[in-house]
Length: 129
Image 1 (cartoon, helix red, strand yellow):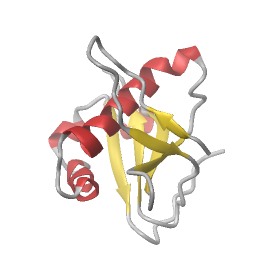
Image 2: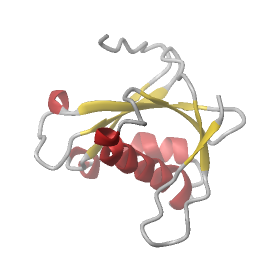
Image 3: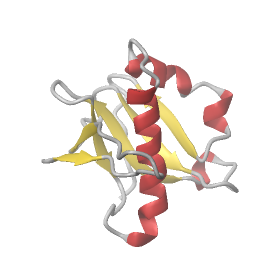
Image 4: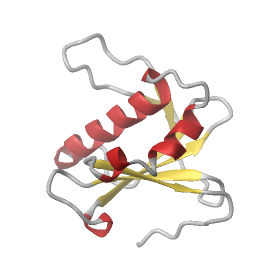
């Protein structure tokens, strides 16, 4: 698959970092990102939006679980891409993958409109059909 350019600009220069838009191996370690919006308190009420996996050639692999071309999903896609941009590129952490794992257990994750969960190796994730 072709790399997908993160496209949000918010008045500044366009974001230049890229990730690979492809299937994530759910038997390897990965993240699930859900969009909870402002009023969703329960994990189960949040919408599964994307999986993030490791890549050997790109910073991360992102597998969208929603139609990113559908205009009604635009806000969710924008928020997810902002999160990926922030945690994997802007923070300049020595090990962004480890920091994203740490973030999963923070109160900022609990109260965010985008919530992260980490799945270690061997915890194969079964998504509803």
